[in-house]
Every structure is written in structure tokens, then in C-alpha cells.
Amino acid sequence: MKNVKIKKNQILALSLALLVTLPVIATSVSMVSADEETENDAQGWPVEPEREGVWYKFNTSLITLLFPADGKKPMFIWWYTNDSSEVYVVKFKGVIEYLTFDTPHYVRRYPADGLTISERLKERFIGPKMGQLPRHLRERITNRMEYMKDWIAILFGLHPPYLPFSACSWKLDGPEENPSYWAFNFTLKSVPMRIFDFAENNIQIRCRFYNTTTTEIIDESHNYTVAAGQLKFDFVVGNWEWNIDKIKPFLEELKDEYGIETPPHETGLALWINLASIRIKDLSSAEDDVQNRDESLVEAISQMQGAMIGDQYYPVNEDKIALGEDERPIQLTNQFKEHVRIRFARKEATLAGFLEFVPWARKLNETGDTVEYVNVNASYIAAGRHMRLFLCYPYFGSYTLEHDPTIGLTLTPPIPTLVTPNLLMVLIGATILIAVAVAAVKARKKTVNLLNVQ
Image: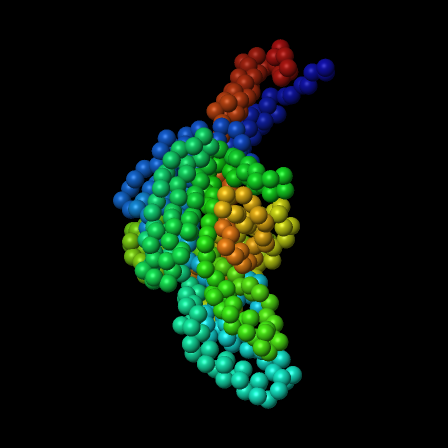
């Protein structure tokens, strides 16, 4: 191999360049996708979470995660351990039963309450058929609908469409350590409204905080990877009592007596989640929020500016709810394969915090086996410095539904401590070697061959 000759001034320049760029190299190496961390994930991770007041706290070398310690309403707060300038919040607000006659995603104009059900049935199915019926039947249906509009909820025992999680009592099980994650569960234990008794012990948020990158395999067509430092939820609902099922006698009457058919089960259940961002100094307000059932203190102090969904930026500063606008659908593609990621953002930058979910959910039977995979739709609305997100599940009858949102950080922070010791030693050693070669040149006034100093 031919030796390459380098003059003294060239070596000096090379040495200086390497010394100057060493910190840049270190920073570049540290900016690694959390999704790609597969080796040595668990180094520096805690043996167990700490209890701090109303919180449990995971404090790792990458991420700090807080969640309520006493089974209060489900809320999760997280940030870079070495950079608390951005603090992310996800709060599980509740579930809403809504009608899907008009659209498969949640729109708050179509809750599954008695009045809305009767109005939608009249407009979509009964009204267009009225002209084909004899006059006496038209009058009978009109009187029947007017009566039902006022009394349908009482007649059929309909529950309110919205079940707020903050009004419920929750039990926290865990955290418990497993080989690749810490597990803890929030279980809804009691509801003050007796008409929601069926929800008790039948709604769970099962959480897994991963300390190593893991691929969850359900079957050969449905799997997903969760990275170290990410928190995965299994949102589980069983034995849900559907309002649309309770009015089945009336729907059968429409069909048998008047020949008016309505599509069965045109309803869905939406999981309402709020996304917000607060300052680290406002954690005390978040603590107050956890302990107050009817407060939205985190949303009131949120500093969130927007979100990236796909490649598009959506501002949340303006309160679209107050302006009377509808929720917007999130377009889901590549069913059964790709996850949908909603990233916290400012107009000039996409931030590290995210919430994501796969566009499918499972219907489970009594033994926990998968009966069917169903599409998941989603909608959202800017609510004034925070985002309301609605994950929308189609009617699942008497089966149990299971779906899996995840939160985490996209990139590890640019801190030198994330450079591996071996790499750092190689870079420093290379710089020292060149510096020694330059010193030898100065001493001996000779041309230097980097492969063989003469």
C-alpha cells in the first residue's frame, strides 16, 4: 500500500478540525431514534419507580414519567430527563357513545342520547318514507315520534352518552417488574351514576413501560414494536350496554308495522383523550388536577401550540369548539400495518413527544381469544392550547374491545452522556495520535508519514 505524505501544516489543520468537530460528532451520535434502540436499552434504568406525593415516578437516563399513584383519574406526564423545557401531558377524559348514521368518526353533534337518536331516525329513515304511507299511518308515526322525542330515554332506560373518567373511582394495580417492562393497570371501580353500573370493573387502561425495545406479536398479520422509554396502553372495554340495542323494540315496530328499516348498530364508542403541554414549574397544578374530579387545570395552563399529523401542521391555539366547528377526521391508511403518530409541535419545529396508535382494534370473546379485527377511526379538534383527540371504535356488541395507544419521545436528547465510552475513547485517541505526530515533526523538522513516522 502506498504511503501518503502529509506536511506539517496539513496535520495541524487536520488535528484542529478533529478537535473542533469532536463535540459535534458526539451530539450527532446522541441523536438516535428511540425506535432504533435495541442494544443495551436497560442500562441506567431504575430498579423500581419512586413514590412522590400523588405520583409514581419513573426516572430513567432518557425519560421521566409521572402517573397518579392512588388510582386517581388516568393522566400521564413525561419529558426528557436532561431537558424539561417541554413537558408533555396525555389525559384520558372518558368514553362517548355516538351515532354513525352520518359519519364513522366522532362528531359531538351526534351523541347517542334519546333526542338525537329520534331526530336522526326521523330525518334519515322515517321522513323519506312518510310520503309512501297512507295519511292515518303518517299521523300515527308523527304522534309516536313526538312522544318518543320527550320520553325515549326514560322509556328505554338509556344512559347518558358520555361517561367522564374524572367522576369515577379507579384502582391502580402495580407497578410490577417484568423482564422487558414495568406493568400497572387502572381499573374503573365505581361510577356515581347508577345507570352506568355496567361499566364498573369493565373498563381498564393496562399500561406497560418498556425498558427494552420489544415487538408485540398478536398473529402473523398484526404486530407492532414498542421502544425502550415508551409507555403502551391497552384500552379495554367489556360488557358495554349500547343505547341503540335498548331501542330495538321500537326499531322492530317501525319495520313490522310501517315497513321502515334502519341499519342495525349504527353507533360507536369514542375514547376521548386530551393532549397538552405544560411548564415544569406547573407540576403543582397538574397535581391539583389529579385530585379534583371536575377540574381541567392542566388544559387551562397548557402551552401547546400545535401538532403534526403526518406531514401537516395543525395549530391548536384557537378554540374551535367555541367557534362551533366540528371535529375533523384523521385519515388512516395502510390498515393492519402502519401506526398513526400525532407529534407535539410548534409552527417552527416538530417536538419529541408523541402519541400513536395502530388503526385496528381487537374484539375478544369470553376466553380472551380474538374474534375479529375492526377498523379504528379518529377525529380531533383544537380546543385552545390543547388538542381533543377521539379514538373511535365501531359497535362491538357484547364482545370485549382492546386497543393500544402509545406515548413516548421520538429522539433521544443531544447530550454528550449518550455517546458510548468506547466511541469517545476512539475519537480522543485519534486526536492525541495526530497531536503526537505534529509534535514529532516540530522536534525533528521532517515530513511525516502517518503510516510510519520517519
